[in-house]
Image (tube, rainbow, N blue to C red):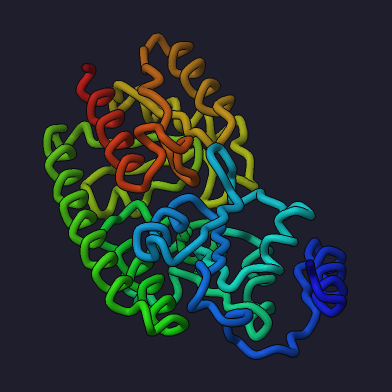
Length: 317
């Protein structure tokens, strides 16, 4: 049962959340109650973060993820049930760098009442890519460079050690094992990418989520929409992309699981109208993992699925 204070707080959060505001905190920035005898209650925004927390936290964490398969974090709006989950959390892990849009401002204002941690926070600016459409705005899709995502895993590890030092050995061992798997994943993607001739390494998708992927693994990346799916591709964007595909003789373009496919279908039609053929190379996971139990239901599985899909399509296999 919620205390009367917590119920009141929850009501205020529910009322103010759409405006990106929160009730001023009046409790300390610490877990709620003794966590040594129970799992730590953690809320995450994306499946990628949930996967990292589960791998590092193991049996010491109970993870609730807000944005499941097919959910677009750029457009996501918290429901009343989500507000309740957040209000009862010991920790909230979110991506940051503007991925969660207005929810990011909410999480920052919640600090002091609930521990909120942006896993992208602290990454050196020199390693962040910018959104060309918005000067100074960083690209939030850091998980597509596996070597960069290790920072997020380390931030999860360090946060759990700080609030639960008695389980330090568990968190450090789990993190070391998972980071080793990520090192292997990084090398696997590099090897798969190398199968595609450099001139054919062009990745065209609905929105500009794959810039880190392109930078890390040697692909030229083009998205019809910007970094956020809040913008819509116009007729001129579709025409320009179609002309580029014809000029470069690109074999395949890709749809995304969390973005409607109408813009990519329009590009394919525009290419065909120019007496050129381009295939829909498959469906890529961009802002969300696949369903639990599927090949793409984990971070490692999702990236393996994506690179196999991309390479196979660009090679015409």
